[in-house]
Amino acid sequence: MKIEVKTNMVDVSRFMGQLAKKIPSAQREAINRTAEWAETDVRREMRQVFDRPVPFTLRALRVYYAKTGPNPSATLWFRQRRREADKLWAVPQIFGGGREIKPMERRLQAIGILPRGWFIVPGAAAPMDAYGNVSPGEISRILNVLGAYTEAGYNKANDKTRARLKKGNAKKGVYGFEYWVNPVGPQAQRHLKPGVYRRVYTAFGTSLKPILIFVNKANYRARLNFQGIVKATVDRRFSGEFDKALRSLAATGSASGFRRGPQ
Image (cartoon, rainbow, N blue to C red; front, side):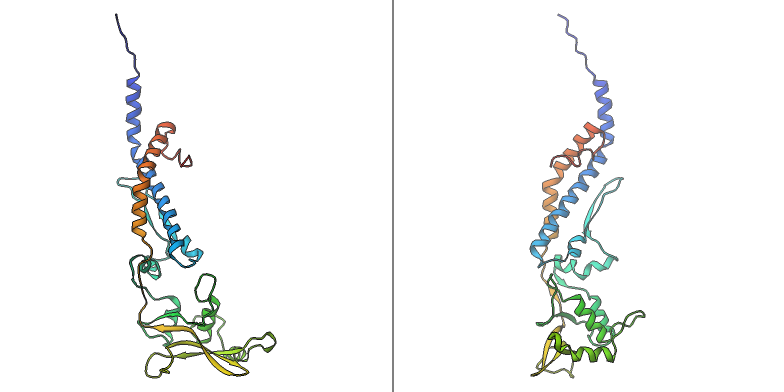
């Protein structure tokens, strides 16, 4: 009996050789897809560990995608205008420790109200926004009234503005007030914490409401397990994404052909 076996091994070998050349693209696709999964997982955790994070904070998380070339790598980090700007909030939340100075604090330092090395925290009477931060309108008014806006183009507060705030609006039931600073140092009223207060004028007299309190340290404990979440996502997702990219290569010739396929 004569047995003949016909195969297309030449074609298969040629196809496998072509496929092998595209393996780096599958690797890059898998890395980028895994980074996107990590972005989703970290953002979910941010909603859990942060108290009402503002949309800007959630949107700041960004995937810096792997590019074509040897040893592709993707990075997950926070969008920032300049390299050191992330220290304003991300670094102490992830690693713990002190935070960098905020723009409001920098302005109060510039006019000599806040000493260097000191920080600001909300006072008990500070008007807060929906995300648990001091209202931007209140911050802007304080900086304006205290003369912290020195650039040209700002509508700077003057004596007329201060008189209007102090008078209030009786018809609307709005008490008049003025901002008063209890400074850091020997001039301070010792029974009060240093900071910015509202001196409120009512029919029954005046009262001081703490709006911004000055503190000489602002340390945070690490709350966002950023590195742990990313590592867990890589361990859980990468092999599956790489397998999907390879199958996509074989079926479509593109590592991203199954990108929007079943998860």
